[in-house]
Length: 548
Ligand SMILES: Cc1cc2nc3c(=O)[nH]c(=O)nc-3n(C[C@H](O)[C@H](O)[C@H](O)COP(=O)(O)O)c2cc1C
Image (cartoon, rainbow, N blue to C red; front, side):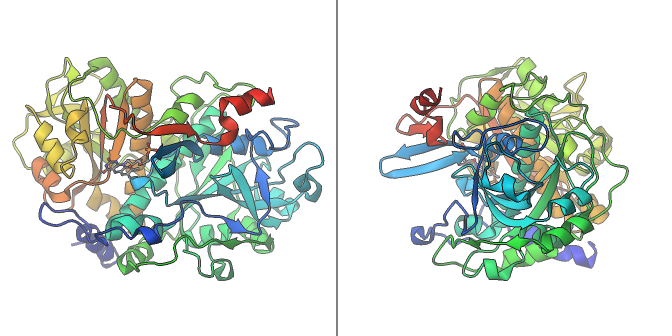
C-alpha cells in the first residue's frame, strides 16, 4: 500500500491511463476558438534582443563580464524557434525542443547579473541584475524585474553564472489533452531540461538542476506568485531551476530570493485563451506533487567539459555532442518508410547514448537512472526482430526479471550494454496497437516504451518525484531525437499509448514498473505539401547576406 501522501499520485496516474475501450478524459472535440496562444509575453516589460539576432547589442567580450550573448546562444539552440510551417491558410512555428501536440506548455526565465553590452545600451547604464522571461517568438528577453547587482554578486559565488527556470502553463496542453495533459507537461519539461543542458554544453557551459529550490522558491524567483501580474492570464506552474556556469558553483537561495523580492517588477502576462475548461484533476495532481526542495548529497559527478569560447566557434568540436545545426534540424517524423532499416552499429550507438553517465545531458539530473527501455525491434540489420529490454541501471536487472511475470528468454544481446532479448518475433502489429494504433510505432526501425521504476522511486523520494520520472523520460527522448538526426534518420516521441496493455505484454502487475513514454525511430517520409521557412526572419539567407 502506498503511503497516504502518494495516494493522489496513484489516483491521477491510474485515472489518466488510456485503455483499449476508453481514453483518458479530455474535451473530445477541440474548441478552436479557445486555442491557446503559443507565446506568452509580459506587456510593458522592456525587451533585450538576444544574440544572434542582428539587432542584438554588439558583444564586447565573450567571457567577462557576462554579456547577453552566451544566454542568447544557449536559448536559441534549446528553446528557440526552428521553423515555420505552412499548409494552405495555416501557419505554425516549431521549436528546437519538441512538445506534445506542438502546444509548448514550457516557459523559460533567466536570472542573471547585469547584461553588459557594448555601445551604451540601456541595461549597461543601469548595471542592474535581472529576472527575464524568454520570448521565443522574438528571441528576446523581457525584463520582469531589475534588482541590485551587488546583491546578485553576494548571492552567487561567480557573478558570470546565470539561472534558467522552467515553468509549465498546464492550460496549453489541457486545452487538447484534458486530464492526461499534466503528464505531457512533465515530458516536455524533461525535453527542455535536456535541450538547455545540451545547448549549454555546446557553448562550453555546465548546467544542472538545483534540487534545493522548492516550487515556492521558484515561483518567487520568477514572479509566478505575483497575482497582480496575472490578472485574466493563465497561471504558470513552477517546474525546475538550473544553474548555468563554467565551473561548479554555489548559489545562495536565501540571498538571491531576498534580492529578487526587493527588485522592481514590471509587466503583465498576456491572456492566452478567451475561454477555458477547468481541469481540477490537473490542479490536484500539481498540488500533490509540489516539491518542497531537497538537499542532495553527494552531488552527482560533474563532467569535465573543456572551456570553449561560446562565440568564436560556431560548432565547437566537442566529441559526443551534437552541433548547432543538428539541434536546429531536429524534427518529429509524421510517417516512416516501412521498409528501410538501420545497421546494428548505429542501433547500439543510439542505445549507448541513452545510458546514464557523467556527460551532458545526464549530468544535469541529480538522481540515478530510474527509467528502462522495452524495445520493439523491427528492422535493425543483424539483430533478430523481437522484444528487448535495456536496463539503464544494470543494478535493476534482477528486480526487472522478478517483476516481468512472463517466461522470457533474458538472452544477453550485447557484450557491453545491459540489453536482453526477451522474445523473438515480428512485433510490429503489437507495437502499433500499444501506441494507440499509430503506424509510426510499427514502421520505424524500432520503437520502445520507457519503463519507470515507479513504486520504489516514489517511496524513496516522495510524490514530487512523479514529475521527475517523466522528466527523465523526456531527457531520454531528447537524446533519441538527436541521435536519430545524427544517424540520418528521424524520431518521434509518443505520448499516446495504452498503459496497462503495455504492462500486460511485459507481465508487469501493480505499479512496481510503469510505462511513461514511448518513442520511435525510422526513415521519415516527408509531407511535401508543407512549405518551410526559418525560425526567425533574420535567418533567411537574404537577410544574413545583407548583414555581411
Ligand atoms: C511528450 C511528447 C509526446 C508526443 N506524442 C506524440 C504522439 O503520440 N504521436 C505523434 O505523432 N507525435 C507525438 N509527439 C510529437 C509532437 O507532435 C511534436 O513534437 C510536435 O508536433 C512538434 O514538432 P517537432 O517535434 O517536429 O518540433 C510527441 C512529442 C512529445 C514531446
